Image 1 (cartoon, rainbow, N blue to C red):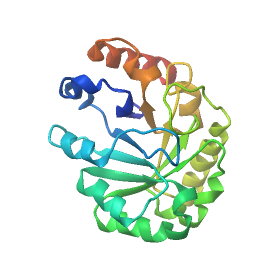
Image 2 (image 1 turned 45 degrees about the vertical axis):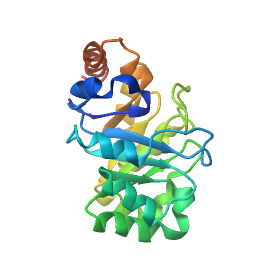
Image 3 (image 1 turned 60 degrees about the vertical axis):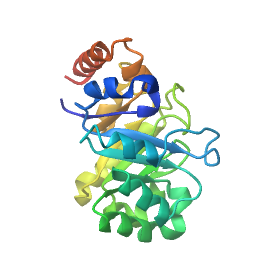
Image 4 (image 1 turned 180 degrees about the horizontal axis):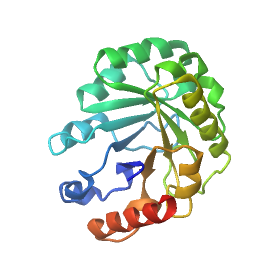
Length: 224
């Protein structure tokens, strides 16, 4: 496929994790949303989930930190629990962004940042050259199943242009409403990784094998 796939595990069937992982192990990444009820009014996955998951998968896990209290101790907990990517909130880590990015890389993991729909790409300009992944949210953070916010696409195009002009190495990832109605416009805007959740994968069919096949067909039809 022309894009990489990162299933959002907050949308999986938590009563059948081992069975579903037999299908999800074919993914490029696993998207782990960590929510603390403060950054957004929701609670979700945790490092202890990754710690158990790493016993049954070798797929790199992306710890998407939607938490107010982001510091070295949480970064260490995520990486020690199995995260291969730690994705930071620029508005939370502004005063310690370089320290955290350096620390993530010193631990052998990749450093990412995410851009919320109401946030300008310029917020990461001071350290954009250090990022391995930039995740563009096309929904407001914290909840699955929200409407697609098309205003995020221009920021993705901007990141794509900068990557080409400056030779930056980051991957462009898109998170939120990745499905058959949006795949093409996201891909055309520069998306290299789709984070697929309820509308793009898990809601396609009760049988996850069939749901994955539907997703692959939808992506192939959308982007060729």
